Structures are given as structure tokens and as C-alpha cells.
Amino acid sequence: MFEMMTGMINNIFFIIFPIILYQMFAATGKRNFFVSHRVMLTILFSISIILCMIFPYQFMTDDYIFDLRQVPMIVGALYGGPLVSAVLFLVSAIGRVFIGGDGMYIAILNQLLIAVGVPLLRPQYLRMKQLSKTLLVFGITIVSLLFNLVAGYVFFGDPIHDLIGIWLILMLNHGTIIVLTALLIEHIQRQEYLLNSLVKHEKIETVSHFAASVAHELRNPMQSIKGFVQLLQSHEYNRDKQVEFHDIILKELNDAESLIDDYLVFAKPTYGQLESVMVDEEISQVIKVTKPYASWQNVELQLLHTCEKCRVVADRQKFHQALVNIIRNGIEAMTTGGTLSIGVSNMQSSILIEIKDEGLGMTKEQVQRLGEPYFSTKTKGTGLGMMVVYSIIHQMNGTIEVDSEKGKGTIFKLYLPAADSLEEG
Ligand code: ADP
Ligand code: MG
Image (cartoon, rainbow, N blue to C red; front, side):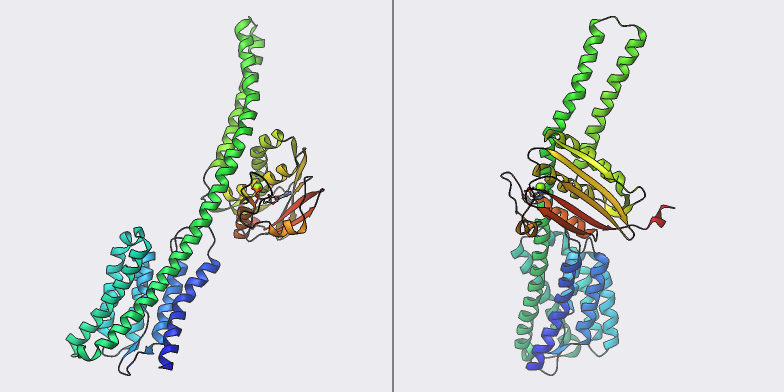
């Protein structure tokens, strides 16, 4: 009995472990378990299957040994789809051939049925409510065990009625474990979904917050264009003068256009590829987007020094968002205006981006709470901006240092790993 328990617990551990590993190392903000890390998870689940097969356990009677390999197979097929299912089938079939014995063909046939049948149920499964999902995985497990039982009777004449009690308990046992596994995955997905929608929420908030200042900033070129058009309408100017006015009008239109473009680039949803980006280009882009908001709050943006060939690997949109969130906080901390300065420097293997404001500053406790969701000292704050910053910078394998003094101001220092400059060629 004791051995059976340890054997079973080992098997459960083999299954749960890769899922926990995934939870720890998968980048936050990815939506679907398996979709973003398919290869990694296929490997981890294959290891689960192999371990389960190497360390099976005896269940109630000495005649039968069992293992839980069908749990990763079924769960893998449901969440990963046909391709993952096919790979997991190959792994378990090859493993089963090595074990050998009478039951080999039945076992492999059973695995084949799981590998082919379960992915067919996947589209419906993914749309189901939690209770239906639970019932379905439980049902699949029961059917698969029933198949083994009936096949054993048909091919080897195993007496069903002698064993039915054991099989019932076994079904309950396997069913419970697979349900718990599926629930764990569902829980992880829900967490990820939640985090994702928080990040999106913060983005929308920033975009709509900036809209007023962008509109304000557009008023200037509009008014100047209007003025010149009125002049051209009311007077007869000579050709030279007309050309001069047209040039001014064109320049103002270009400015307005590029302001709108920058804003739209920033407003785009943040799902992109990792690429090697030039830090100074990105910074000047971000300064363009935040400038209207800064001047609206009487804050001057200053680029102190930059690093011309410095590159980092980043999802461009997310990188922008992190910088904008920090700059926005700096601007908002300077309630009576001031200067926000930005500097980029090269520190051999890493790039340092410093963002310094002369604002309210923070206490030690406040600095410690930075990045905590919903921590905000502003009446209309979301308290999500810094959480987004931390999650983006950590995804880039960077670190954040904060120096702040109450009443004096704050410096944010971002250390980001430098991308290989060799890539350029
Ligand atoms: P929000 O800006 O919506 O309040 P954030 O996550 O962006 O949320 O910031 C959380 C809190 O951290 C702010 O409410 C503020 O108290 C503090 N904070 C962040 N950046 C600064 C800064 N540069 N100067 C002073 N306080 C800051
Ligand atoms: Mg903020």
C-alpha cells in the first residue's frame, strides 16, 4: 500500500513539475499555454511521459502495474493540438516498445486512439466552461481505461468481474489526477489572461490620457495654417511671397502629420517580435510622443547624452510603452513644471538609460511598493504603469534601479543587456 502511494505520488510529481516549471519561466503576458512555448512544453511533457513509464506503480493487486502517462498525453493533446499530440504519441509508443511484454500492442493502440481522437475534441474543449472541461477530461480518461479493460478481456481473457472493483477505483484515481492537472493549467491561463488585460488597460489609459495633449499640440500648426490661408485669400501677393507662405504651410502640415504618426505608432497594440533596436532612435521616438504631454504640464524634456551605436533586443512597442510610462510618471511628479532629463550610456555589456525628474520624489516605502499592481498615490492613477514597466524590463533581462528623495526628485536607471553589435553586418 505504501509503495503504491509513493509510486503514484511520483507519477503525479512527474506531471505537475513541467507545468510549474512553465509557470516559472514562461514570459508573462503570453496568452495560451503551449501556443507560445510549444516546443519547450512538448519536451517537458515527453519527459513526464518517459518518467511515468520508467517508474510505474502497482495498484491494489500485484498483477497489474500502472502509470499515469496518459495524463500528459491527453492534456498535451487538448492544449497543444495535433502536432504536440503526435510527438507525445511517438515518445510514449517508443517507450512502450522498450518496456515490451504482452500488453504492448493494446497499450500502443490505446495511445494511438488518444493521440488521434483527443485533438479532434480540442476545438470544442477550448470553448467549454470549466465544469464541462472537467467532465470531458474525466470522461476521456474513463473511456481510455475502459478500452484497456475490455481489450484485456478480449485478447487475454482477463476476467472483468474479478477486477472491476480495482478498475473502478483506478478510474476514479486517474480521473481525479487529470482533472486536477487540467484545473491547474486553467488557473495559470486565467492568471496570464488577467495580467494581459491589466497591461492592455494601462496602455489604453495612457493613450487616452495623451489624446488631449496631442489635440492641444495640433492646434498650433492648425492655427498657423489657417492664418496663412486667410492671408493668401485676402491679399494679392507676388509669386515669391506666395511660395514662401506655401512652404510654411507645408512645413506645419508635415509637423502635424508626423505628430499624428508618432502618436498612432505608440497607440498600436503591443504584440510584436523581438528585434535588435537602436536605443537612441527609440528614445527620440518616445520623446516625440511624450513632448505634447510634457509641454502641457510645463515640463521640458531634455536629452542629455545618448549612445549612438547602442542596441538592445526588445519588442519595440513594449519597450516604448515602458519608457513612456516612466517618463509620464516623471512629468506627473513635477506638479509645478521642471525639467525631465534622459541620458543613455554604454556600460560594456549593458546599456544604461537614466530618466531623472525634479518632482515630488518618493519615500523608501513608496519605492519598495513600485511595481505592485494598483499601488498609486494619484487620485486618478491606475497603479498599473510601473507594474507594466517591471514586467517589460524583466522580460528583456534588464534591471531597474530607483533613486528617489522626497521633495527632490527621482532617477530611474534601467540596465539592459547590450545586443551584439556584430549583428549589424
Ligand atoms: P499611476 O501613475 O497610475 O499612479 P504607476 O504604477 O505608474 O501608477 O505609479 C505608481 C506610483 O508610484 C505613483 O502613484 C507614484 O506615487 C509613484 N511614482 C512613480 N514614479 C514616480 C516619480 N517619478 N516620482 C514620484 N513618484 C512616482
Ligand atoms: Mg503612471
